[in-house]
Length: 209
Image (cartoon, rainbow, N blue to C red):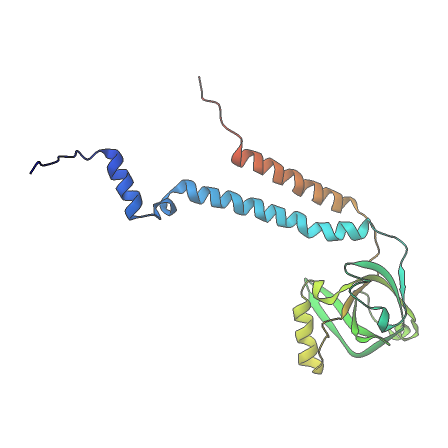
């Protein structure tokens, strides 16, 4: 019988190490540095995406759409934020004040829409509000409104009332108006994302002479 001798090389040991522990890359600093870069890009990208719906609204039609009856409230007609005038009278039977970020917001409904419209104002509500017959602002599907789940919980806890799935949210006095702050924030986020992407994946330092 002829014996076969094989000399183990450093390359063999490296290959064996990789096969025996396929998760070795998790212990390398380069891997986690790449993960950190991707997370930074995702965070800045999310900041930009959040601003897009607001920019679309502020750049949209400046003539409000009239809404008179609950039958007009459909997702096909109002799939996104729309500048509207809702005709009706205020209903404060299920009204409440919600405090957030140091500001007081009053939530109420509008007749004849009932719980199909949850309206919000940051102004102080007085007896003069009972004479109002139209409400100007930004209308959007209720579930598209930030913190909508918290408002649902308040209605359940305070009034044992449910906000229907086909409800809408009306932010009063939120008219389409583009501001310099919005343009600056969107531009800054876009430039920051591009600069970070370039430096993370394309920029290479020149070797010193």
